Picture 1 (cartoon, rainbow, N blue to C red):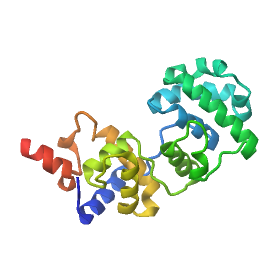
Picture 2: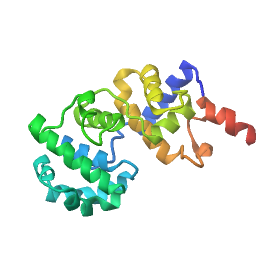
Picture 3: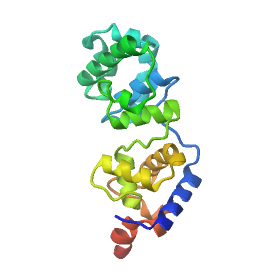
Length: 216
């Protein structure tokens, strides 16, 4: 759904006002922990990942520790995060590369991050923006849904949504806007039943104006 620049600017202003200071809900102490947590979060809730990672990082604190494992040794520790066999293989392979090519350090470059097993564009953007303050917008299911409903994007896929958001949102707000949209998606703009009746963005929202208002 398309929107006017005036409305988009107002939406961003109100989102910032409501969700200022919002950040990733994945608990981590360093870029490496965030990388592993983000890989685990694929098709899994942040809440569940946060239940798994404290003991996981206590037992295996460094890339070298994961790199020394066989997938079967890691699987029991991450099983509750889903797709654990694939995630186990990817995490171990990624850690081997970190040790062999990057001296055990997580690269900050988005394109380099995407060369790691299990790290797609979204994961790379999450790590780069949250761990290294790189200007990036990671488009997950919440960001995709909410931004297209609000008319901040008008796209049918994640990549096109990301490109349009980068055009419609000032670069210095990319990192923060990612979190505003996620929080709004979790708290108000739910997938199945958005809470339009309590939403502070309805005057500027094409989804509300087109789909909901006429039914009231």
